[in-house]
Length: 147
Image 1: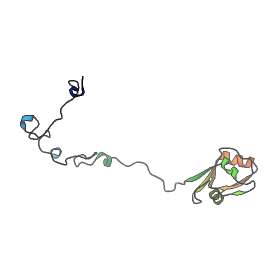
Image 2: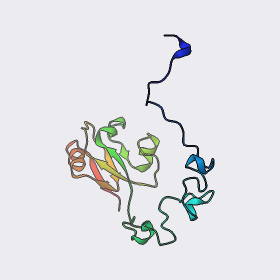
Image 3: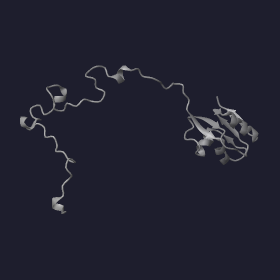
Image 4: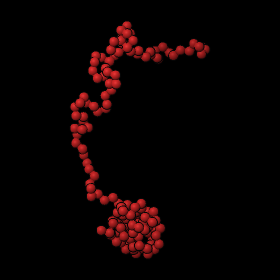
């Protein structure tokens, strides 16, 4: 065996179909595209979802769901994150932004009850979970809900 007589095994390769090379090839005349029509023309590719001019399925079906206009998006802060404040301090939106706990003062703030606190604070926010309220009051702090 030498490099000059290496051949692929019989039946493992097929010759490419040479279309449009005369009637004798068996693939002449219409070059396997059939007679006339959109698919026989040059550039005759059909986009996905096209149904021949009929209203496509994705436009026939109704849209579903919506985003309510009165939806309130909250910035969430856990109780355990409030330990960076000094004992007896007042925690509000501005102080949370200053410490980097929330991004913007414009969004409403909700305090969640994950973790524990050892200091007493006066916390004012738009919403509190029941666990957060209980933990703040148990630590000797006060809770102020902003309307």
